[in-house]
Every structure is written in structure tokens, then in C-alpha cells.
Length: 207
Image (cartoon, rainbow, N blue to C red):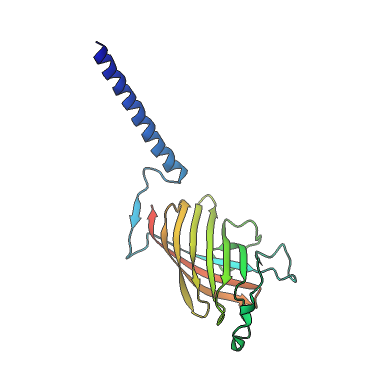
């Protein structure tokens, strides 16, 4: 009798632990913005998701309005910025922190602080010979249509018409996404404003 009771107790404990394990998996899926109906897609021939966005960067230079500025230099260029006289000087070593609005069209949004999509991160000038930069930032989506982030990083070779940087991960609706973002300078005004066209293609995503 005691043996049968112990067996039943062990079976009950097994069921409880199994239920707790399954509940933890369900909770993890909810935390990461996934549900059991979504499936992981990986395709290197055709993207599983693509979008076009425009990034607007307005650099604060002490002459423009702080309310309209979306980025600021966190460091000054190093002494090596003027190491190559033929270039007239670059911004080598300068780090810029930005919180830029992103739009589906080219026009600036009415309010720079209330856009549903923002790019938040840094870029730094990393060449003595030309105005080249390196980006590391997150695209933050905060709307009823999309919520989550995409994380991007890579070299922006400004002299080239188009250049690719990597999409290295994501959260929420873009959980564990990977792909490529193709950048193109769409407009610029001196050193205080530029607009980047960004064509994002994801080759690993949950749909």
C-alpha cells in the first residue's frame, strides 16, 4: 500500500513540474512578443519582411534651436582629424548621440518628439581620409501596428551611393530578426541636417 501511495505521489509531482515547465515556456513567448501561432522563417533568397523608412538627423551646433535638434556631439574631433591636409579636415574621432525621428515619407513630422518610430544610438567618424561613419543604433517602434525594436550596426561609407549595414537582432514584433538595411543619403544641409533613406530587408523573422 505504501509503495502504491509513493508511486502516486511521484506521478503527481511529475505532472506538477511538467505543468510549471509548460507555463514558463508560454510566459517566455508572451514576454518576447511571440505566440504559438507565429512561426520562425529563414530565407536568404526572398526577405520575410521589408520596409522603407527615412531617418531625419538634426545636429545641434549652438546656433539652432535645442527643441528642433535631435542629435548632439558627445566628443570633439581628435587631433588626427586634420592629419590629412588634402581633405581639409574630417571629424575623425567625433562621437554623435542621436534620438532621431523616422518616417515612412520624406517630410519631417509635425512634432519631432512624438513620432511612432525613432532611431536611437550613436555614430562616430572613423576615417582620417574621408567623411566615413560607423553606426550602432536601435529602431524603436511604438504604435498599434508595430511594437518592438530592430538593432542595427555597421560602416556607413558616405562616399558610396548606397551602403549596407547589418540588422543583428530585435525584440517584440521583431524578436530575433536578422537582415540588411541599405542606406542612401536622400538629402543634406551642410553639417547640421541629413536624411537617410533606409530600405530594411529581414531574412530571419517570426511571422
